[in-house]
Amino acid sequence: MFFEPPPPGEQMAGPPPRARTGLPAWFAPPADEMGVVVQAGVVAARSTNVAVAVPAVRAYTSGCSIDVEILVRQAELSPDDAWELHMSVFPMAHVMSRGGDRLPDRLLRFGVRYADGTKATTVGMSWDLRPGQEPPPGPRLSWFPSAVAVRVNDEVHVHASALWLWPLPPEETFELAMEWPLGGIDLTFAPLDGSAIVAAARRVEPYWPG
Image: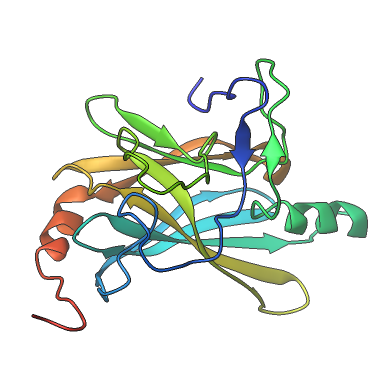
């Protein structure tokens, strides 16, 4: 099992608090860096009603932001089922685990896996941020507080967001994992170029040098 349910009572998904100054590097991209874009152009998964694309990755000195586009179409779904699918795209509210050996089908989850087997997922990530808190063990993958939904036409909607990966990945190919039973997406892995991301991070410059 790649995506493991957290212990009972722990948070499975939820939005981060409103951005503020002084966020630690493991929590969000640095506010004083533009980042360097690495083109990915990967259609990572698709089903009858859903397609997941990774158009680009933005490298920073402390980690990288993985752009994710989730395309949803109604097709043969009923209006109620289509609405449920749309509302399940992003973790709009905290979801607490009741325990057990499976995750809710409506929970969209992402993960990364490195060549040595190390992995991190968006399941069970805590958004509790306390003053002086020690960094968690890396790697850490979390939803980044930027999301927009665009209706391409009456049939297709694009939900655009990003995942924050801290720290930078190894300089080798690694895998982005995703699974979304409600969207018809079984466990799927897509390759990303860690070497290109790390190389781009070396070219990052602050907005205000000095």
